[in-house]
Length: 111
Image 1: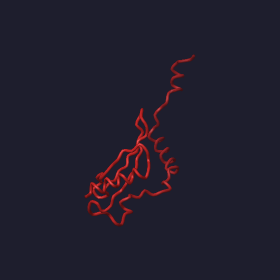
Image 2: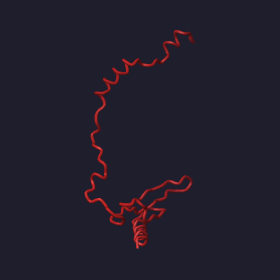
Image 3: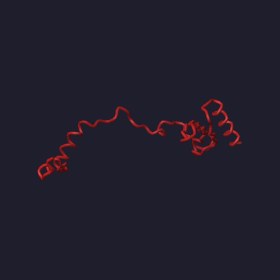
Image 4: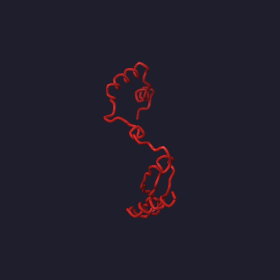
């Protein structure tokens, strides 16, 4: 196996010069295009924003994998204005009854 100075020099990766980097950037500029979609902030889309707590609640159902156990499902009710969690329930399955139970807990908490 040949391991001399010439072989090492031919196998070595060299750093590109600044002129080469500029040339690559100008060539790549034509390859990079804008995405086919436009990012819109969610807040820009709401015409009736909440101005006080308890005007609008949101619900979310998230599933979590607990290693060594099983899947668990977290049902939450969130206040849109304050972003506080009004009620939550950790469930072992994902059923409508679990969401309605969480909503009942939120209604009790808001009284």
